[in-house]
Image 1 (cartoon, rainbow, N blue to C red):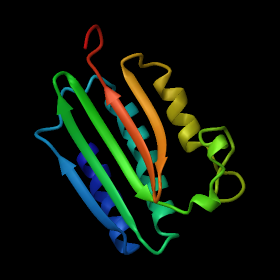
Image 2 (tube, rainbow, N blue to C red; image 1 turned 120 degrees about the vertical axis):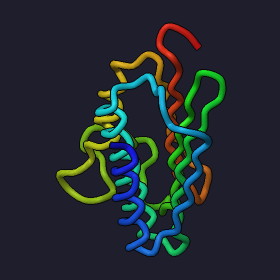
Image 3 (cartoon, rainbow, N blue to C red; image 1 turned 90 degrees about the horizontal axis):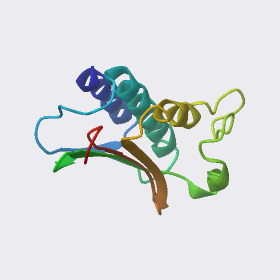
Image 4 (spheres, one colour; image 1 turned 180 degrees about the vertical axis):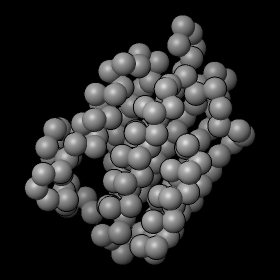
Amino acid sequence: GLKSLMGVKIREAMEQKIEVILGISGEVSDLDIEPYALLSIMGVFLDNAVEAAKDVSFREILISFAKKDDRWNILVRNTFDLAAVDTRRIGEAGYSTKGRDRGIGLYSVKRILKNYKNVIHTTSIEEPYFIQRLEISRRGGG
């Protein structure tokens, strides 16, 4: 499922003339999170990345999966227009830079992750990039 989702989203990005950089170290397996939860989260991250990157002149998305010890680090980094984002409201229900009746994506990610004490989600900005990170450790350890 993850491979299919990423294939569709990468194709969408490329159709928008967005450069996509994909880094995967080894086989992505043994992620201690339900597949549906991971697919939902990655769908939000990638949809948001494509939407944001297509609105700037320097268009880039980086997707990275790296395993270190018993932890998976997943990163989605994209270029975006900092002036268009109220960084204090990111993840708030109903907040969106995309117009009315939007803004449930990152809020839904927060709701999903309430069920996972082994997953750390961080959002950061390092101009010109908007960065979403997930660190998934083994439940019961690591």
